Amino acid sequence: MLVINKIDLPQSDPDRVKKEIEDMIGINSENAPLVSAKTGEGTEELLDMLVRDIPPPEGSPDAPLQALIVDSWFDPYLGVVSLIRIKNGTLNTGQKFKIFTTGDEHLVDEVGIFTPKRTKTDSLKAGEVGYLIASIKNIDGAPVGDTITGSKDPVKVPLEGFKPVQPRVFAGLFPTSGEDYEKFRDALAKLRLNDAALLFIPESSAALGFGFRCGFLGMLHMEIIQERLEREYDLDLISTAPSVEYEILKTDGTVFKCDNPSQMPVSNEIDEIREPIVLVNVLTPNDYVGSVITLCTGKRGIQKEMNYFGTQVSIIFEMPLSGVIVDFFDQIKSSTKGFASIEYSLIGFRASDLTKIDILINDQKVDALSMIVHKSFSMMKAREIAKNLQKLIPRQMFDVPIQVALGSKIIQGNSKST
Image (cartoon, rainbow, N blue to C red; front, side, top):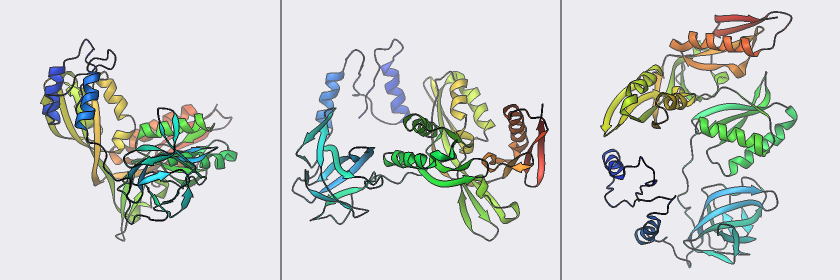
């Protein structure tokens, strides 16, 4: 259903917006309701339209129990609390149920709905959405997207849940104090409970100690997770430079995925390195087309298409994902004064001229600072890293060599002293 909002703004132009929607998306917007949440205009018509046009949920209360776990979170007193949607059957207080993938059986302690506060009920029936409490203490006991079924008459086929989310950005997170490692692991597990896009595996670094290699959907997701860990769980964390997942074809013909520069084999064992390529669609006003094209081509983008929709221009580029994740969004917003919008999707992997650069401080390689870059940017990146480290490293009474190496070759060197 298409709804046009914020019609109370002085610069709103519903007729122009309708035409742009039809041209860009292809959705008929002739009967789209015009709504202002601020003034209340059009809200009654919208609510009537929701009741009239959106079909009611399907399912039978008498059929075997099938419920989808939409979300889960951990309560220190209640255990895992799950938000569920009943597809078929009925879930009653005191009933025994089973998690489809794990086979674990639990007893319903409480079910209810949100009104918006948590309100206890005797049961949840087909078509209803509510919460489930069953004293599940195992954090992985109710995975998001799993199916709940009855213990006595279980279904044989699970509901179509959420597709596994593939992280696109990877970074290492390390606690500044080694004593916080167990606390850090428990915090990640609790966040993972209701965030299926977060992945983490243990990782150790000679410079930073023990931590976790984490996978995120993007930079915003990474920043949110790190902020939640620091605020909600009182952790002080260090993050390594974000990277993407590469495909490496070795000389023996094997292919493996590498999301950590420290996992990269030596150069004489590599046949080619393939980097993820995304299709980026930038929607911007006419006045900023030139600056957008300049920025995207500077990130090794290849322009594929340009379409005009009234005062807006849609520019489509093929770009390496590594050029998008770091500061691309900030630069686009800055160059278009915040008027541009961006969306991108992964289209595959492509062989590219990539290399690994290592950072050596006082002749010791710091694995946490290693990164994979395009060879055309290696010298520029080396100078940038050496210059920044020279500012960050505290002054000493002796020279501290700062070197950037490309394989066994030193391509940049500085020193820090008093």
